[in-house]
Amino acid sequence: MTQAVLGIIGGSGLYDLPGLEKTEWRQVGTPWGEPSDAILFAELDGMPLRFLPRHGRGHRISPSGIDYRANIDAMKRAGVTDIVSVSAVGSLKEELAPGDFVLVDQFIDRTFAREKSFFGTGLVAHVSMADPVSPGLAARIAAAGAAEDISCRRGGTYLVMEGPQFSSRAESELYRTWGCDVIGMTNMPEAKLAREAEICYATIAMVTDYDCWHPDHGAVDVSQVIRVMGENTARVQRLVARLARDFPREHEPCPVGSDRALDHAIMTAPGA
Ligand code: ADE
Image (tube, rainbow, N blue to C red):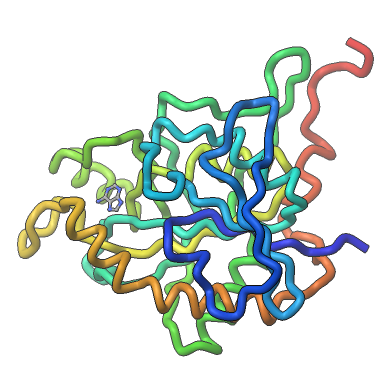
């Protein structure tokens, strides 16, 4: 049996969950570089949890400056089988308002200044990203939301931009014509690397603003993002705590094969 270990990548405040036990910050080294911070090892009702502050404690690292390979590899080394990405996003749809939670199931990767693969030098692999989110994990997050009376919209497309500047109005309008639901700066290459590491991945996208396209709302600024994230902290903590309490202690095989993504992905001939 494979023991399930829940990894949470997100902002500060998340790891102050009431009821956390056996807490210990541990430095986890990787051959790729330094992860954003130490990882908080903990348990909740016996469920092992690992928290990694994506931007480092105190938010010191910009989206382009994050070493995503080091972060995902460190989570793998910490035994994580399932990653929940907790991420602030802007809304590209009228019906998604600040304060809403969206369990996205697709991404469009528009980032261009990040290392995106563990493979390429000596060993070539092409994993499937057709279904970047693990539906079993997303269903468990939705169930935790329902149990806590926290509404989570199921499905949606997250446009990942490079940043650090927010979008121009023309870009925002373009992404709306593409049918995107939300926009953010961090979930790629995180989701791609999680797949290469055979870790299940799902995102709780927390809407903080209407980006800059909405005629009745001003353009997004950081004070708005921080304010809405602060208002969301207690709700997302409850959601994560419920998810952890109800999570199966034995890892469940992923319906889209996230946990065995390399089975049919290696191109390089054995011994080459
Ligand atoms: N994170 C939160 N709001 C955002 C926005 N409007 N664009 C990009 N990233 C965001």
